[in-house]
Image 1 (cartoon, rainbow, N blue to C red):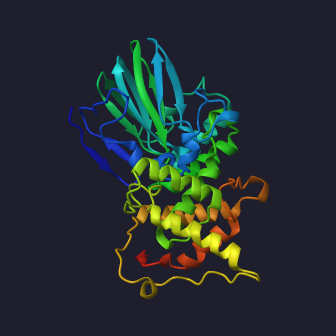
Image 2 (cartoon, rainbow, N blue to C red; image 1 turned 90 degrees about the horizontal axis):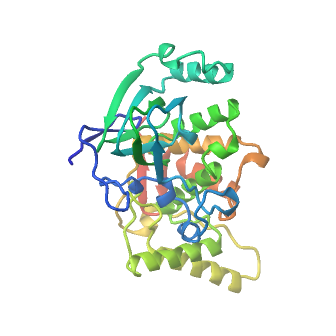
Length: 352
């Protein structure tokens, strides 16, 4: 079945007709091209996941990418926003669903937060209080994508089987952070929230800094593990870096060189180690530019500001990050006041 998509600055909207699923439950237009779990989280941790359930104590990565939802006729889920501001892909294998969708405007999100805190959800239909509520009917074979932050309620008119999943991405980071803050204020129970949320944010910054500047802020152990997984997946062949598609697949040669440089420095240096000088396009020689979208630029700025603002006991710096302060500093120094970058042989600029 053919399907069309459009991007409106908030998320993806699927056209009529749905998206065909493979036997493994993957969408034809693959979400993993933008999903942070597949592109930012250390791959070796995901490979080590052996616990089939969602027990947080045994979870090695945010395990929210694939769900099978079985609903009996007459089920209703009241208005909510998917955890952490995640976007959602949703495929109706059997049956049907009816959605009420509310755009995440400032006004609507304020009304939603007040409604949640009021404790009167059972007495008030939120769709009557917000602006722009729309009713959408999904039939068997339809695929639906819900953008970040959209408020929605769901009714099941017949017994239904659905495949779906949640994902964070780089094209609406401010909304994702805003929804996480709403969850804080409305005191959402931890088991209903996106796991390792801020840990993921740190890895996102690290991958962007590395792929733009060739400066890694991962620990040596994590770099070595990621390199080995990369060689297993890629067969040892060097792959190009594409920020919009696969930040996790940085070239193996760069990882090997980075680890080798660390070893040489630790074994040969007897005194204090001088900071690594900034690399410039002239020093690196000719190379292709790496381009970021306006959505990524604004999102990275919001991400830095958010992580900086967190108190130390809530920063949730993952063990794979060598020095969180240095990572933030590297990002800010490279960015500058106008969010222009000069890193390695790559250059990008936001036009204000």
